[in-house]
Length: 186
Length: 142
Image (cartoon, rainbow over all chains, first blue to last red; front, side, top):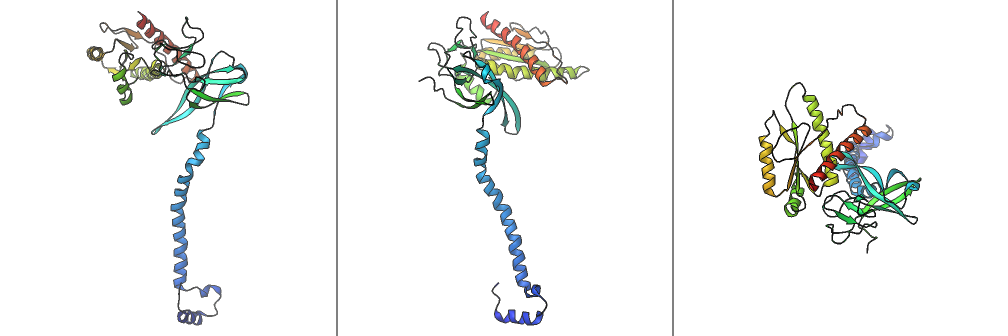
């Protein structure tokens, strides 16, 4: 790049009068092409890195979105109803479709969704599964009981209240979101 | 619970609650009807998956116990080990009647799953699973 005047002058004299292209020396040409190729290579390395760094930002929006179910909000009553939802789960290198469900009911106008996974050792609880307790969630494994808001009945094995799901409505259908600790029971 | 590192660690501390072992026994003979045996194995794995979801907190479902021929002595040995470990009940899950002393056996119906629509298959697995579930609860209550 820092060619001395002497050389440039010599070159211009030597190649003089052959148009614009002739003003580029061999050294300049090599420099420019090296810079060009170099910047492509640098971009090839830096761009994917930048994309990886930003990836979590793009991902959160997708994973946080609610899952639409096939149950209409109008079908939900005050009686807890089983609402299936399906999502893709990736275990190491194996991707599979998983169907789970939530117990959904209406409290006034508000929808409430409870996880059916017993907080004792992880069995599936059913609404009114025990004939003696028609208004409670029942765990068949060790006769655990939960009230309708998910609170564990003292004296039965469960160690905490049932988890809740974020629940919403989209086009008249129930949507299920993230799971969180029960907030109905304080 | 399944025979995995995490679940077995839980079982160590909770053996008083997880008191039932399910041993799925399947044949793996290589003969003219092995295709149908393979189908049974696929089917029993679906049943196991659903059963695990329903009664995770009280069952240990052991890995598939594969048998060749009619000899079920290894199952007996395994059953005794489970008993020594602390399991109150051991139940064999199988597609055919086998006599394994002092061990209740739940015989499942063989459902041909080939080319079946996913929804129909799911319904059939569910139906069969419910039968097995009821049988297990009956054994607990007896």
